[in-house]
View 1 (cartoon, rainbow, N blue to C red):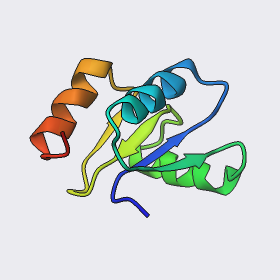
View 2 (tube, rainbow, N blue to C red):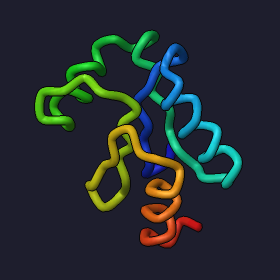
View 3 (cartoon, rainbow, N blue to C red):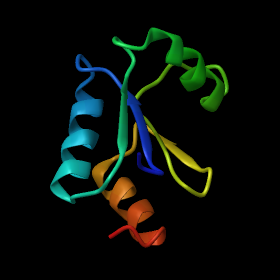
Length: 83
């Protein structure tokens, strides 16, 4: 299991884009599909301070990004030394 967790859903275009980038960069992560695990929606709401926005990507340092752009996600991964 990875220290990076992404919460998303297949119908979400931003989720597919972030997932594709992580895969292209060969980043190890755990993907939580909210359609398969709807109980995890409460985790997303808690992380987002009440919002249900996805994707939510949680990092080993405890920080997270919600709906990140590809450049923002790359920057975060670089800052963490993942890239």
